[in-house]
Length: 273
Length: 256
Image (tube, rainbow over all chains, first blue to last red; front, side):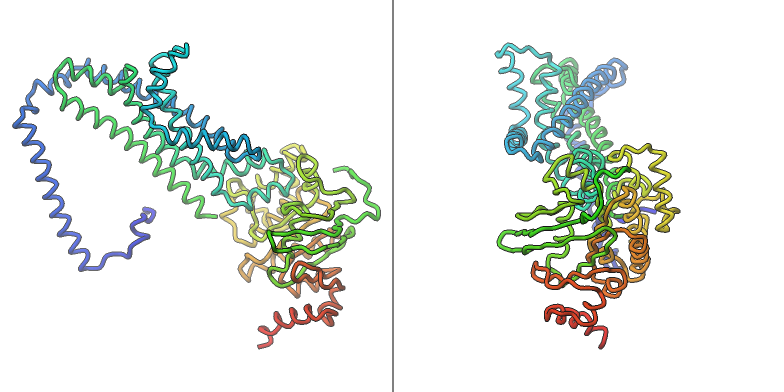
């Protein structure tokens, strides 16, 4: 039922000796992990981090509503940034594959620039420099635009890799039937490229989501920012950060799972060729 | 489709002194060739002789450095709409089938007739089914290309080219990627087309087929046309030493 994993494809199935060794190491590893966990919990206990006052406000509905509002803002910013980044990335890819050398050169420069500049630097740019140029942006755009720009170059490269992965014969067949270059790209090449690209697009979305935690710089009330407020009001750094970390992990885990599923779907169609 | 240019005595395909280089390599040396309406020309020769390249220059999948290519008397444009328009009149069948992998066989068939010839979807679909019927893969119409055998894919690819009602067909080693048991079914389809009077240029390694189907054999070696002959003459007493050697080299293994 299960498709063979990469492990199955790379290694031969273990024999009886290896299976025994795997079992022994599994037990040792589990014991080790349990011990580490015990150390962490004991340390928290000693430092008084497990006292009810650090945790009982999580029983209140208002705490979760506040975190929920932050999460919603995070998702809104991440999604907006992702949509903009995908649009910009697509245009940059078209630019880089353009026949016109000027268009190509400008696109390559933009791609390299956006890939090379750290997101935080872009955020400072939109936060500190752009207002001085007389353009005033709200907190939402001050976090969304830099995140989008910083992802666009990587997405452009992902698109380009996908387009290049489509066999040349597909283009030749379309051209030989009299399809224009534009139709060949949009009806034959790109629909096939998109299947290769979706997994890396989703991985990039995870990075965008994590980048939005820089929102505190521009005082945008995202999950991270709201967590900080909770920390101050309840004086409870460890518990709040732990809970928020779990929330981020769950969302990104979900996204990565989705990407795996799509990658498997994509691999299947590619293998059927 | 209405006749857009007078056919008359104008060759369907004409190459005049065509030259092409890959860097220092002179892959097509002063090739001149003309294919009349209804004629079946087979190009054979050792690998690397330029026969595939020659075939691909005819609809400008390969550019040329000098010389001229005329389709029904009209010089092949270098780009744009007019090139696409001329390409649409020359069907091409590839070694690797090249059916569009993301659409069903039927969608493969109707894409170009709808978007290039501006046929209605219904009309295109009817025509497509008729052609698929003719090449014997109508029952596979709803499947993706990957679900078909190589022979079925290639027959569907031939049908896809025919859906454009081409004036001529180019076959670039149409059976070289097929398993042996599927070669026959594809060659039969091509033979039928020849009998119906389709103008064709075929690059192939199938010598018996070449002998049976062709009106004229062109033997290429080292980027040149070395010999141009009737199939009977070429296969029984070729006039050039290189053709003699070539035929010898491919016959020996069978004789052993």
